Amino acid sequence: MTVDATLTTDSAELAAAITGEYLALADLLDGAGPAVWNAPSLCEGWRTREVVAHMTMPVRYDGPAFMSELEAAGGDFTRLSNTVAARDAALPESTLVENLRSETLHAWQPPGGGPQGALTHCVIHGLDITEAMPLARRVPVERVGAVLGVLEGAGGAELFGADLSGTQLRADDLEWSYGAGALVTGPAQVLALVLCGRLVPPGRLGGEAAARFTRA
Image: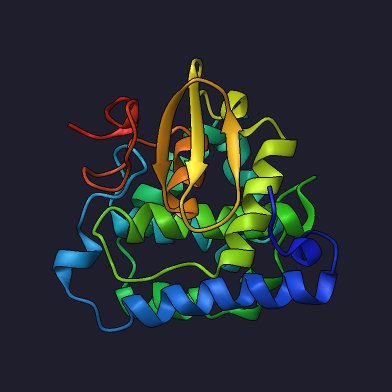
């Protein structure tokens, strides 16, 4: 992979990238109508509003509040996420957009994930929204490259249950490939979603194995 790797090590650039991703999504959704907010995302069972409610949890739940929610969910983080997303999706859209602009959110890092994990979290969930619609936004290539590096290093495909056996992912907008076998091509940001186990909308991928990772 050949990309600007400074984002993976420079904390100031990472912080700016994280803030930039949240603000870009806030600007896209500010004033958006029901067709956008109620549209299905690439997160199974979640609309745009559930994804944003999930992304912005750190604004509304400090450490003790989060632990209380986790206890109520029997220690099951997936159950907690679904419960909170369903409940908080009912918040006014203006509140959710304001949460996306919160400095508290911009400073949040997933436990054990550091700033690289925070960038990956906001980029992937932002793409869950924008690629599903689709909305016209391209994540800056250096940010996508950093996320791809994180996903590779963390064993993203295995972590998210993506079966990439017998395939090679190859970006057509930066020098990056992953795996070996039947070719799957597309924008780096779409391939990042494939690494995370998402099925993407038709027309976003090329190559002989594209259909395997495309929604029917």
